[in-house]
Image (tube, rainbow, N blue to C red):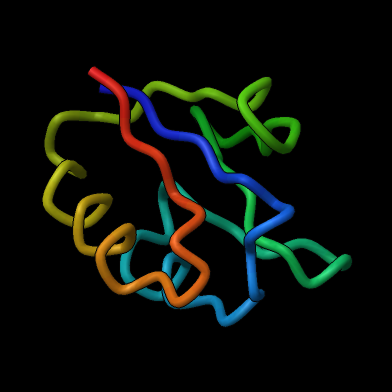
Length: 75
């Protein structure tokens, strides 16, 4: 599974980082980004990242709770 964040829609609430800190992080610009193997990826669809199957529930919860509806999960 893969995930990415549309920073144009991100509200910077940080719920995704709270729910799945191994997959999401907030940067100094106040927006959320995806983390893959400890590396913060570029924003938008260019930041499409793989995440471990064990994080699937947390990533789905992050997407459902996101007020900006900016988290996209792809198979």
